[in-house]
Length: 241
Image (tube, rainbow, N blue to C red; front, side, top):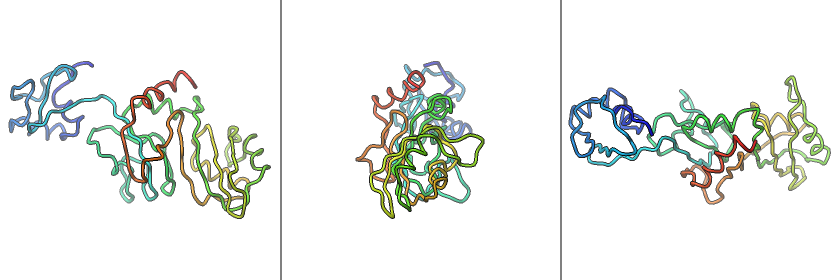
């Protein structure tokens, strides 16, 4: 990792803003390699230098990756003047974290939180056609005709039909239970697709995105860091799609 300014290092780790970091340094609350730091602009190597803030050793990782089991009632944004955001559920203080893609306020399920912009681009780029699988409860009887329609693509009011999608019926009744895998991420796409065949989504949960699958042991509203294997698999997206 390349060297960086001490104030940037501390700010990236959530110690405070640049100005707040300068105050902490003036108060002699920061040590580098055992010595009290006297300037905020000194250069450090996060891989080699040891930094303490308030006698706590700081560990720097350039990128962080979290799996969130998103609950209803939260918007997928870094900030919102009215609604609760998914970022309020993330324990990290690291700057630059953001949700990868969006789940509607009333949608549950898998949401990746990271500060790795390249990975986010690879997952969201329309050119990649990354699979996203959802479980849904549908008001109305889902039929074999709907499966075929989704395979061909449906008209959701845009210039082109949706890309072919895989619809699996688990239960077909007045309230149906299905799984749907799509390769796009258009606004309210799953809901609009079912509306196009005369039905209504009454519950929606994302189960997977690319190579990342929702941990069945992760409770709704909880978050955990991704495992090294999960991160490695996600980094293959650029090569495999």
